[in-house]
Length: 250
Image (cartoon, rainbow, N blue to C red):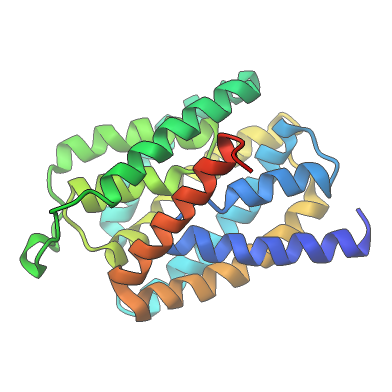
């Protein structure tokens, strides 16, 4: 990897970190670039990318915490459920084919887009709650989300937003603060599995992690200051772009 490639990877990481924290889907940018710029195999890119995502989420979670979003107990509770699923997903990640990757992500993002832009569902302030709705169901859902996150990772943020905000009734700002804790929790064992199997390349991982950490800080600050409206706009835009890319429309 040349110096120019490293700079491009750092800048891509910054953009991906911002998008991941504000909405989701940044890994659709970083994984291809790890393959192109870093010369990694798809599996190694999948593993290496997790180092950057983990660092980005730790930085963003700390920033959310400093701005008053301190529900660590809820985040770690759901994160523990996702962690069990992530171990399962990571163990079978080696068998993921390109066609399966495209099909699964396209379907999930189209469903997420349909939910986000659905008409006639403008919620009042009273709709959002401080306590998560359907807590028992959420534990099961995050086990499933953990399997997906350990298996692919890219696009997991959309599933978490659906579970916590659309189904669980939390604001998008609080949802994003919990999302950082949950993803960081399940990425620890998932990353360890990729490391044990030799599927992490540390030089591109460090470069990318530096970029995503910066992007995660700016993205979490943006989410806190701009609130739900702008997060929703970014979420819709990110989903449209990523679905178009996955379906090879450009």
